[in-house]
Image (tube, rainbow, N blue to C red):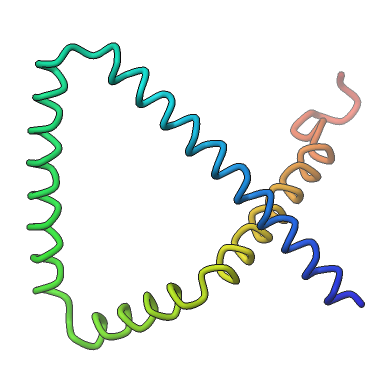
Length: 123
């Protein structure tokens, strides 16, 4: 019974997280379009060039990190990434549940913590 309730709560949390993520993605796309519409063409061209340079630098840094990473570590990271890709929904659900629990605990802790740090008898 309790497991079923936890599963339902996890599903609801995952649905809410997906909804919020979609809303954020939509708002980000709208904001990006507004910025693009208001930005002069030469500035956009420079931004495209800069993003290309950043992508090249990131690729170079990735190659360097890959070259210097020991094989056992690289193998373990690869296996972990494969497992994560295969189990995205349970991982996202678990992460969302954990986030909700942490937020609830923080909110509850704030209500209890009022008045701390004051000397007794003083207001």
